[in-house]
Amino acid sequence: MLIKTAEFIISNSDVDKCPKDHLPEYAFIGRSNVGKSSLINMLTNHKNLAKTSGRPGKTQLINHFLINKNWFLVDLPGYGYARVSKTEKKKFQKFITNYFEKRKQLVSAFVLVDIRHKPQNIDLEFMEYLGVSEIPFSIIFTKADKLKPMAIEKHVKDYCQVLLKTWEELPPHFVTSSSKAIGREDVLQFIDSTNHEINAMR
Ligand code: GDP
Image (cartoon, rainbow, N blue to C red; front, side):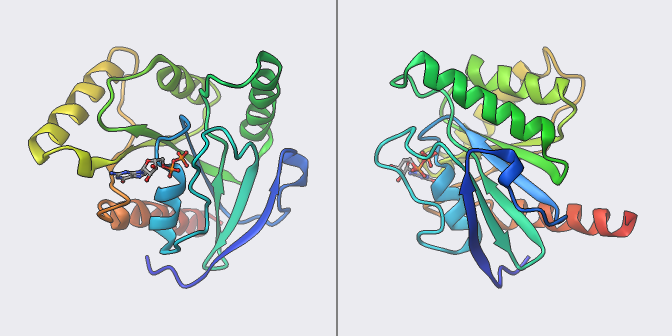
């Protein structure tokens, strides 16, 4: 998919204030510092569309970006940041679950995980939550440039083995690196073909 336009539309913490358009929407989420902002910038070919954060946990908002005027890329806040208070964590959980439960336009989520790390409970539990809520999702492995090709293969295989303990079927997964622009076409192609399927059903 060629990215012709990528525009910031709105940031908010209230799902009812998200854009009313009925365009398909794809949400990006993961632990703070996983490389989400860098990935969004890489996918959209923008240096600064999503702000890369020096301080994790800073962007606690739902951010809508309109891509090619026909789909929304949604940047959700990073989870699992230890240095926020319990009250803030609860508030965060509430508006994220509100988003996933209420947002009819959501087609699919992308859960980002750092390819170097073993499966973390917080990510597995989040995928579990998406499964129970019947929200389709894919996994995006980030920072692949930090590993050699053989190690990439092994880490992905090991991760899938863990998933297969609880999942009958593996979600689609993508290996990416924002600094080396790896995996860009695969993710965009997935979104493009999903958009075509949706349009064909309408
Ligand atoms: P976010 O908090 O999930 O939005 O993560 P950021 O995009 O701000 O990235 C967190 C840190 O990881 C920053 O220091 C980035 O430079 C670094 N980073 C992000 N993506 C990559 C990548 O693909 N490769 C490498 N080597 N570093 C990355």
